[in-house]
Length: 320
Ligand code: FUB
Image 1: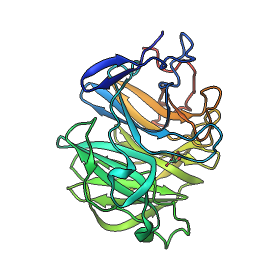
Image 2: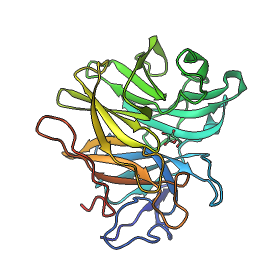
Image 3: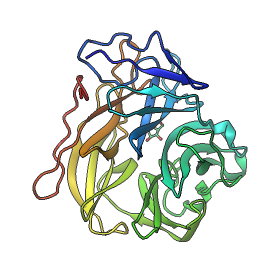
């Protein structure tokens, strides 16, 4: 199937010319081929899926992250993706100096909260977590607080690194209680207030085997799943629990190292009764790689005992 990604600008729908570049007829992975996209965080809202991704903008000869904006794509079928205008940049946070690292958007009571990783200015040296808010899943988003929610100095008792406060993932319980997990080398969680932009209580830690970063929470029936990047180069591993507060039981590897990328940042969603594993690799020829990544999607399946089957990464991706 030849798919077409569309760019929605000011309400007009335009086909982007280079989007199908190097796309084999039946290859739907990566899902975006005209830009490098990373750290996909998926949101199911009404009849669509939204993917929020960091824009990898490192020049071909540079092997370090260069990410100046986040991007948003939507789809009603997981095959055809529409690109929307850039909804948020680190410069939208006055206290941040850059780095559009991993993020997640979640909806509550008709408002969309976007938890982001950015570099804080020198008043709180290190990576930090902020939150932006919008009335629409595609924005515009604005800083919801005017300050970071988590700064590096809140967690220095656990690690000596300045980049441990990254990769937020947020979960809302059926009773309205909200939680945020995040971390690098050390996994943290905290309960959020109902306003979704402040936390309450102490920052808690969880120890999981070879935790690197990229936590993601999902739930099926009465089981919670906490998937995360494992070792480096990263595989994806996961743990299960009967409670969002743990204890978490490690269950093993969920996905292998993703092709040509030392990170493998996943999100997991159910959409129209199917489960999807959304991640990135470095597979776009000829300059794709660990700093020029591309979002891919494959199916996720469960065993009869509720554990997860190993993901099979494919070039074909989602066909229908
Ligand atoms: O994209 C920058 C960083 O790389 C993310 O925050 C991590 O999860 C890793 O994918």
